[in-house]
Image 1 (cartoon, rainbow, N blue to C red):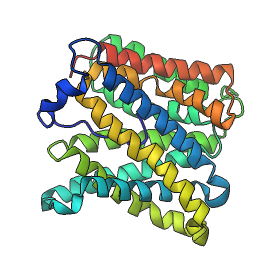
Image 2 (cartoon, helix red, strand yellow; image 1 turned 90 degrees about the vertical axis):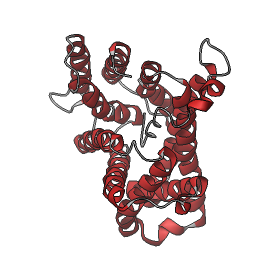
Image 3 (tube, rainbow, N blue to C red; image 1 turned 30 degrees about the vertical axis):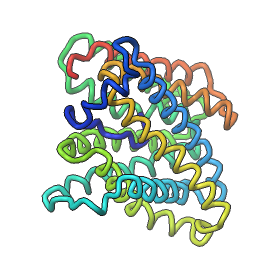
Length: 305
């Protein structure tokens, strides 16, 4: 996943819909798989669209618009204001939302200067590290080695990463760190309603990023054409993926979900090549493949549901 992936719903939250979401069969869960694939494609297309705003309002302003519009859409969809959040849970949601907001800002700052697919591969190291370092199985050392090898191919040391901008790589690593924190904090919200928690988290992230975007972009942030593109990017890269992921999570086992999402760096790099003309070197493609192998291997050999 992904920039701001939805948190998995609790086991019993939507079990009554599981059979329906699986397509009504005991075989291959086609509908959830298609939903997850569409989610990843929409996220990549939305981010590609958002990147076109960088010359006008910068990565900071683009992040502000994306999170702001996403928050509005999600709050309206979940009608969060109708449900009171217990006081003791505000701090839990606040940490979750702040991490989400900073993660998105760091990622958008990264793709200013490094290819979209490469940034996703580096960012994937965050959730991969959470999954691998919480395990003690020997096979996991193989996936750790793949992830480290892929990262070394991308880090701007000894010319290994070619023309990659060091600042962009550092921003991507910061996004990876935030994604790891996002997963940890997200797990602590599992007792709350998934949809409303995501809406509150995105809204919190938008409030955190908004001052940065406003200072950087100023009144350019409110130009009609900028707002229109920002709305489109938000719907494509946040609202649609989050909705589809929630649908997919109900009908997919954890292992299948992990294998599917591990394809995201390669899928993103392909879409970025088509939409943005971002071509990668063989070393960068190799790093993406190693990242995919590490994530897929971790998902396939994982024992916890």
